[in-house]
Length: 241
Ligand SMILES: [Zn+2]
Image (cartoon, rainbow, N blue to C red; front, side, top):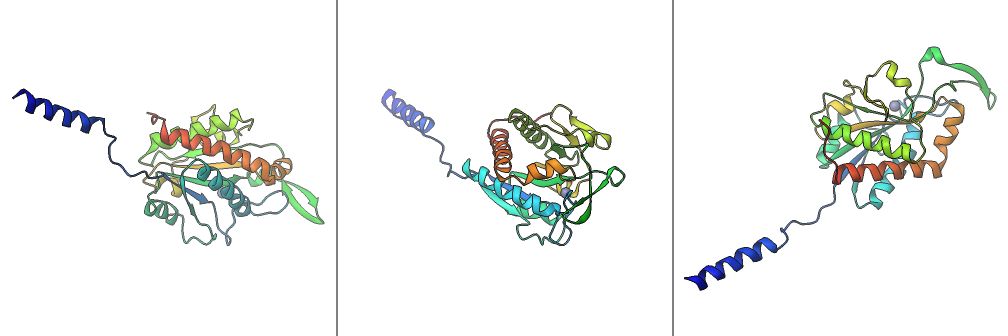
């Protein structure tokens, strides 16, 4: 029955040519503001808490990701999150495909020097500057975590940002060129079931870099680099081995 067979074939061909019915859904990226209002993390050369730096950068990263069509969930928006484990738990509840925890770096206590600023004695260190990235080998999505971290590192260097290699003293490299380190025990990364990375934007104990890190135009440029890299890593990239 050639006619019948031809009809069947045309139905099959039509079905194959039709786009699969899949409702368009934006990928959810969770952006975590490191530390809290009550425990603000590191202190800058001028006495400002790390949490405030993290919150400012997060605002810019959220904007840049949204501009690329991604849905963003801000974790710890009010700075009062209950625990470290709550961060990846909230990201998972939101269906996030990536968790980025934003931080700013410091130096060891024995590297601090004193200076006077605004009538107060403050502590600084001008020897180290630059960003770095961290992934955990205890995260089940290490391949994709590492890929996203490397692509962010590469994109930022392309934009003229220089990484720091000071953290290699304590944390082994996952990718030396892009200053990506293994930091297996980090709770926010190892308790995450989706790919996760921690980004240290720069060293706030450095007097010059502190001012650069507060510059909103520079924050926006850094956020733009991060968002470009995240889009590339989530949409096109293949996870590392
Ligand atoms: Zn921190």
